[in-house]
Image (cartoon, rainbow, N blue to C red; front, side, top):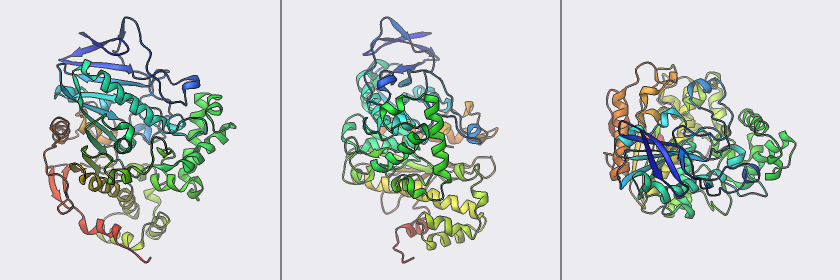
Length: 495
């Protein structure tokens, strides 16, 4: 059955199934092509008549994932210029809470067309779900001398303003908006919380496996951009990049990303890029002095998001997604472990403690645990502590382990549990019978938080630090997990 919604640009036709209406591929900004490719987003043009919103729209230009991640991570690529689009799932009615989802993918990959992000279950449970595309790679986050920086974030802001203006037409309440994201999407959420131009566009936030420290200095972001331009033999300007094809731009991005990951001297790529991404990600939001004035964590510590409640957490073994399939972990010996981590600024005392606490793990697995804590868990705890001074914060950990050998509770594993889309999960990460009970619990907690501001467990405090851990056979609330080990990171050292 078709349904009609009236937006500021015109009428939309969606598809209603079992009481849930999906409006797909809705343009929230003009096509970023030609001279607009590297500029701030402009409003979507109006249309006459009723526009079909019955099929997923185009995805932002991006390379496919490298093997073996192309098998582990579902990442549909839909060509087309109208890729600044969003999807809406709604049960109808009025005054409903809204959840706006920002996808992950290292600011280079991902889209709202990923099957795991289907919003049917949220709509079934009374939440209007909005999923957003934004510009990626050089187009979204390259630092150019003749264009605004952080264009991907400007796209996200444009989408949030679209929600404020239009979501009531889909049954949503613009005064009850929660923004959420995972990985790069989680970093985006933390950044949006911290900047003045996003104030008032949302009331709650969810940061999954993200960070409020993952920003780069503009000068370091310019180094990465210049490296891409060098491969294309163009100037690192909007005009220079606009003179090459999108395919050539993506190919050059791929070369630079691989070189950064394999570089024996990563400092030449910019110190803040390396410290933020551990050599994994070449693109980050940058402190440009216009949209972003300081690290998000510093702004949030100062109360930039006062009154915005927060739900944040990690998976138990984040880095295994990056270290096991790539073969990195298999190449780490006991002798090399402290050397590799020392290059990343990890003191020998921390390495020794983690090794002693994990007698059954290989050196490569210990490496992943330490890097995962440094890049994901510690920034998450720092974010919760900072926001707790100005609002209510909740902590979670996703602990169910993939049946795929060695992957454990790795990065991105929780996504179909949150969205209650396990039934359509085709990645080998989930095996033949992933636990629906865990999805029921996790999805219900996210719905409760979006609707009431309370996910169902005690809020963060510095003394007890309660963490809801989702897993089998039971999901449990644990107080101050791994307290002694995590405390080592804050201790001064003479090493």
